[in-house]
Length: 109
Length: 113
Image 1 (cartoon, each protein chain N blue to C red):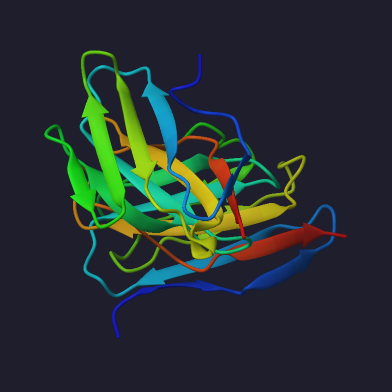
Image 2 (spheres, each protein chain N blue to C red):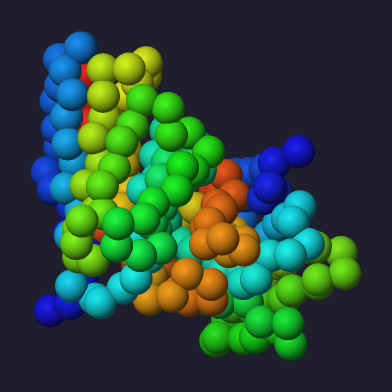
């Protein structure tokens, strides 16, 4: 089993749609969690950290469920500019940042 | 400006040659990481370092070597023992190992010719 697994993509959605990504992790001792965005042939950039209480940043909402060991990212009112690959990242004890394989999102007009 | 810099952006290597990828950061970060990304794949951890003069193998360390002689620098050597070195290599750093985000360099695209 992979340490971090994401929904397989790609997700093709129309502008204005709501889309949700899920990610599961295997190490119950994982310390912190993030969602990164990666545009084609570019480096990943932090989208948002994920807190136990859940957090929201504009159209983006992240949730963490420690009991079930999954995190989620919800994008509301999707824009063309949201098209990218979204990476789930888990920071384990010992300092290893583990990335999921990414979920590609394509927002169409 | 503070940041993390990788060089070169593109690198071509002949089979059988070792090559070193540079990664420098001026963010005063303790931790540094090297990842490899293949087309359509996620990032796989090669090596990481929590402090100067210390580094740990990641999931795919075979055929690679690193050093961490200075806090600012974490070069990666791709040796001739790496059987399939063509990939996109990403260096990252973070302020603390446990709970802070990582910042990435722009990456080096290595092609073996």
